[in-house]
Image (tube, rainbow, N blue to C red; front, side, top):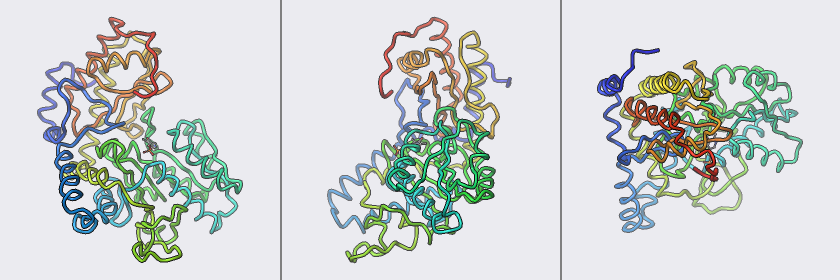
Length: 418
Ligand SMILES: *Cc1c(COP(=O)(O)O)cnc(C)c1O
């Protein structure tokens, strides 16, 4: 147990926190402790003025000229270059576009095709975890069923089973780097090495990694990656996602969503598709410019710090949360499902409770916003840019109070979306 034992200690830690000033860059409602930035990041203050500028001036005044004068056309690539350092990618390897689901489809299709054209042509399985975020599995199953060439998705039930599943039939190992429910973080470099040794390619989903934990795609020798901008990157609700294709795979990267934005000369309006040379080939069609533009407001904040500093505070926050929950709520049936080992932990802490849904509803009613995921999991996300140590203290104190007084209604209905 660390030396932090009182709220004053937490306040003192906040005072010496090097990221402290960045909290001011976000607009958060009074009286709310927001521990759900892993689902929808908070709003950077600059997003309001940026939205105003895009809607009123760029769209309202400059109209169609803005595709050039306001750089709308280049936005997916420009934002991709700005995001690249956060995930260990290089310039010209990332575009911000479409949704995570769609980008995963493109990356998987490209990986399968790469195998089909090489020595891995007979390989037929995509290996992933049963505990993966459902859309990832749905997209993989949708692609394999649609291809109708004998491909199948093989689901493994534990991390230990992955190396054996990546066998001579495995075309692609598709993993989400940090599990959305448990916060378990895979060893990307190790698994990529094992996959390559077995002849498989890797596709990584960084939805809960980008902006949350340091990622070095090149050092890990990953093959493809996708991820989300509306979670830890604070891009805004439904903001476009990203896709990474390393330089070494760009020439061979092709996917079936060959819209005009992935064309080498979109305005030639010519017959016949010719893929763009660079990362532009990962695009498909026209982007939601208003939403896309706001992604920049989130990325700008990251340029004022480093992922190393964010990681250090993230681990301190999750350590403190786990320690306080276990030391003050010990008599209650709570079970930690997030790894204690730092290298295996993302930027969240999840606890099971038999009435997790009702307890979370009670927490939200008291201004502590986390979320609930089946089965029985209360999920708390920690975003070092705007979460303080005092927030952690206060959140646990409220949790303890709710549990001690059984101030939750175990009959509470589970609504579809919380
Ligand atoms: C949040 C999340 C998604 C979201 O996909 P969308 O297409 O943006 O809805 C996908 N995969 C994982 C692992 C996620 O955590």
